[in-house]
Image 1 (cartoon, helix red, strand yellow):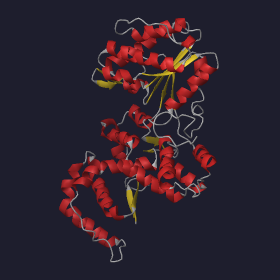
Image 2 (cartoon, helix red, strand yellow):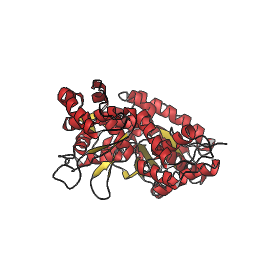
Image 3 (cartoon, helix red, strand yellow):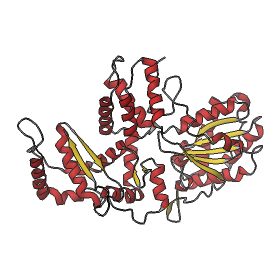
Image 4 (cartoon, helix red, strand yellow):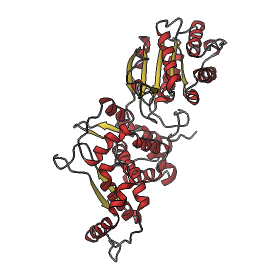
Length: 447
């Protein structure tokens, strides 16, 4: 059977190229042995669900536990009606458990409870009836909000002291964010800000990206199956562009081997990977689009805007810095300073922010081209100066990132320049203004 690079949902080992899903979470089994309740949070499409499904299967097959991954997402449609949300969640959990566990490990018949007690009562009756201690991984927990979220967390906390005979031995909350960033509507805040009411957690873990060796190993699986090689430079380029972000690693390879180079006798090169990058950025699949949508959030804008402007961060809360890191949008550079997580995200970010300025641009005659079609940089500069004098001030109002509006308008203009072929490369980071030794935000055109 053929295998494929996966960019949608959990990996399935019979049809997908995949690495060991649990190697990037090496401490979980020890936490479970300690009867711990914990949080696993990581950006979307990094392999959380795949890893937890694999771990649950391994734990159950060991004969020591009844382990399962369930989802809370169905309850998100009823975030302000705890009773209805509980019924929906428990109904989905029962179906999932029936699909994944043998009959002797499945829960008994459950009797409906009053709102605010359903999840605790369900887990209690199941733990009491199960011949093995329960390990429950609750995926998409941060899709819940408000009363439903608070009620669910409190019920888990209330049952914690009764484990393992009357409540699950170990519970893991799996989601995009850590507990403090779960959304609630109380006291004028939209976040919990602390671990309460899940202050029983022992640890908050995150799933790291692939390293360069793992990217090469994943691509080698395709070579082993099909004979189609990735050159050493192609593998290195894929890692450099993605910094090991799993969805991006798979998406680049999928674009190349399924669409660009179907002939398995042709090796995948550095140039193929670069072309696939441009296609992904232009297409902005769901993963990239959802990440870009975050730029509208005030707490993210407060961090990204100074980065684009090359300025120091202002009085930004530590939690907000950790939040953009948890989202996978930014990372702490080993040499110091906050940076965008990888070159592809960096390009997508600017593309998104220049959409409105680009749409607002008038028609511009390409006066910067020589008769042979080459770029004349002096003419390009003059064309931009003329354009700015006529249209610059109105275009500054087309973006919400006012500190970097001139830069974004310039980027929009340059995108119009390269429409006929070529690329724009950019760099920017915290503290790169004229008072710093680091270069200011720059753009280069390659045609």
